[in-house]
Length: 450
Ligand code: HEM
Image (cartoon, rainbow, N blue to C red; front, side, top):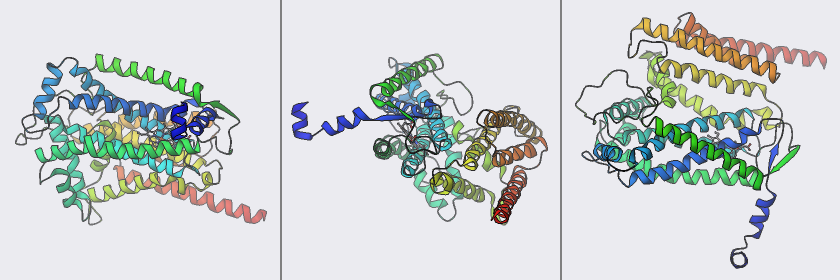
């Protein structure tokens, strides 16, 4: 140590780590472990990805064949592929939990705005990993799902055709697309990810974890070394056991659409597309939202307006630390907590519908879709009721306008059968009227008190 310290002065770093503490406050400590769990799955992705690369050969004749040989002939090749796939899904689950928990705890409030933005970039990069990795086996399912997925960028105003060309390396999904996705998946995205995660972790080390809202220092602290770090380690071990159990017993996924990595047939660009192609589960909400827009709306193309809506929603999510003015002043911001829950219910309903829960499988007839919307609405409303009861009873929350609006849309669409967009306009209108009335009443009572 002395030898290293004389050359690189590492003592201050060790002193910093020795004194590092994690705040223990009014909320459950478990939320503080989710970033670490996400990182654990990312490390698994890197290790198994490198192992897969030792056999995978991108190319028209080799992509599919190399994965087939890997899973049937190479000792434990099937297990490495299965761990890589399972870990990708589990990483997205823990990433979503981490993102929504930091949002609800308002960990984005000053001085952690850039921690939020860097995390948001990690979220986009992770989705990029999922999208680009899907095509690499060059099987039929991946080919058609990528055709449908890349087609969406065509609707981007002005740049759509150019973007499609850049993504596909031509007009159609071809082996050029695979080369581009391969470069993205194994070089560009990992480099960008490592850079951004470096920033994310650096900021967390610099600023520490956020204490509960309303305080600047937590009532108590837990030593990071060894207390928190050992708990982290124990949790990673549990995650490893869960991962291996899934990977061994369900090597090709649970077999539900969007979570299935059975190799099937090799991609054939001349084969007819088969119906019922679905993207991975975490893209289902966008896929379903696109389906809810008519081909033309107000003289514009429906998919264009839908992409615009998605861009606005993602944009709002990125700049939440600056929109939430109360959290900015270290005050509770119940409206933004409610916004987070409304977002979860909005995504849940669309995802369930995208999964065709309650519909005849693969059927696109209106009666079956209406039945599916009905069943999905009942599930979402039940989940919403649980959320409202727990928030009101356990956490004494009183702000439910946005959750209420999200549930109203679900009920009007799924139970009354009105079109999804009409239901959206009704519920957004209702929320707008209530919030405006509350604002005006508040102002009137303040001025009469004055
Ligand atoms: C692969 C993705 C990610 C990894 C590996 C990661 C990792 C971490 C780690 C290890 C921590 C410290 C422990 C903790 O609070 O859990 C953390 C904190 C944080 N992360 Fe992430 N993160 C990721 C994505 C995100 C996303 C998508 C967001 C939000 C958009 C986000 C926002 C934050 C914030 C605001 C904190 C500070 C929490 C606090 O101070 O209490 N992160 N992250």
